[in-house]
Image (cartoon, rainbow, N blue to C red; front, side, top):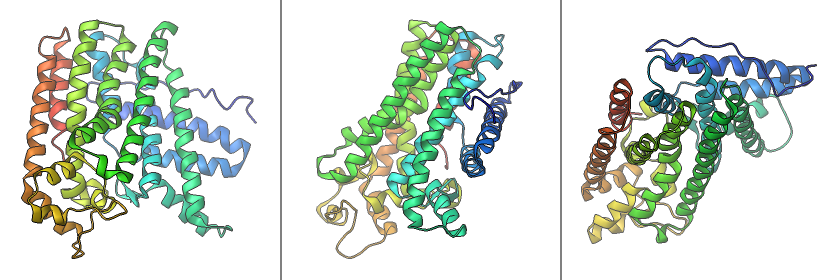
Length: 370
């Protein structure tokens, strides 16, 4: 058995201009293969657990966080700097994202993610298939929490594999730690909102968006990438303003997709936010704009779920929200924030290719079908 299961050796991936996502996924796959081999040597059950975790991490995704980190790095480092040394660091953000998704799905009791069973559902099914004792749902939830924990540990290990000066890694780690703390804070507020909807407002929903989504999707990954390249106060300020605006717009787009998205494309059932009564900016704005009759249909039951007296389905509630004009207002907020984000980059001392890429990302990340 290996003496140390914490220090895998991973091959270096090559990166071409259009090959960032494959390089990130290759870095993840190589790292995970070494971890699986080492846990297999401890106990075959641990190897199986690690394989399940690997499969969840490598499920098809947008890889937005490593992408924003890469362009945050390249905006200051420039196109001539080799990307290989920073690949483990930016890939670590995807591992952290997996941690957040797995825990989020347990808290929301979500059945699917990216068109496949969520971690807790998958692990509960394994429990049944293996004929184990006890409640499979309880086992699935507990095991999924451990999957998320393992992803967070692995993210730390992967970050340590970046071949950069110690001072650079410390600077990047400070952004990384802040990002993790903000993601946890935002998740707590998101959960609190479901249980205290009467205290929620549009402004508070946007506060959740800034902490839960904007911070760890756009703002901090950009600043993390910059820290991997060096430091520049003007660039950091531009990334802060761009990241906050585009991150909020990303979450507002998610709010719309949660109600009106095509499940075949989003990989999640439509109307989940309505079923749980999640106080999104969309729902809060709809309640603010609603007529008395519309507001009656959008009233929350004691459990915090949108549950009108006539038993209307989420489809009916989605129509009521649309009739209030809230979706159009949300689309207007998205456009406004995209404009603000793009404007923040206009005078920043960035390399032109990175500026162009970030402008493109501002649009594609906030005008999407999934």
